[in-house]
Image 1 (spheres, rainbow, N blue to C red):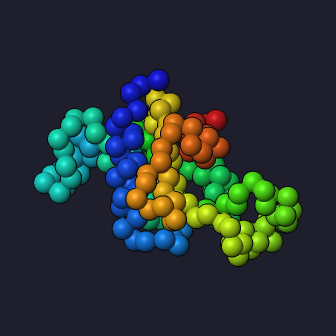
Image 2 (image 1 turned 90 degrees about the vertical axis):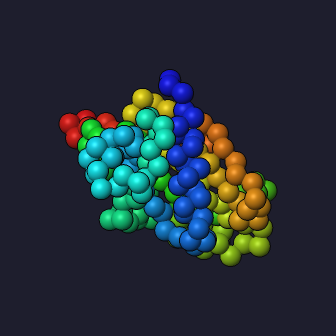
Amino acid sequence: MADSSRLVACLMDVERHVSSAGWDQPARLFALVTTSTLLEVEPQLRGRVPDGMPDALTAIEQDEFHATHDVVERLSGIFWPDTVEGCALAMERAFLPSQYEADVPDDADEAAQFVAKHPHKTDVRVVVGVLRDGSRHGVARLLSNPDDLLGAADLVPGLADALADTFRGEDA
């Protein structure tokens, strides 16, 4: 697998961008393109997009993306053109400490309401990204600890798999 430092740097930029709008946001999808490719296709962006490193990635928000209650299902219908080298998804979720898992209702809607109203819930924003070469990484910020940015290659493996599947091609 290739060096993922450029993916990590791009995800940190995406998280910073998303954070600037605060919390309680819908899921947001970004195409990741090599900055040099972006400037070749959109030369009018020269001077507005930093182009210091030739293989750096630029995130382009997909404004038409509207996640349903099942983000993985929504991602399954997305296919990227060859100029897109990767993609990233920013989303917020709430979770409970493991000692409360047995109390969560089986019904998905009831479970969501239960977690949202629970006094011990933790709100988290994750930004997970993948590249065509197989690189993957995720970063996360807790609402309760906003100064720390956590990160790992396998932070949210199921979401990373769903994002990677968007590169399978339309014939798959």
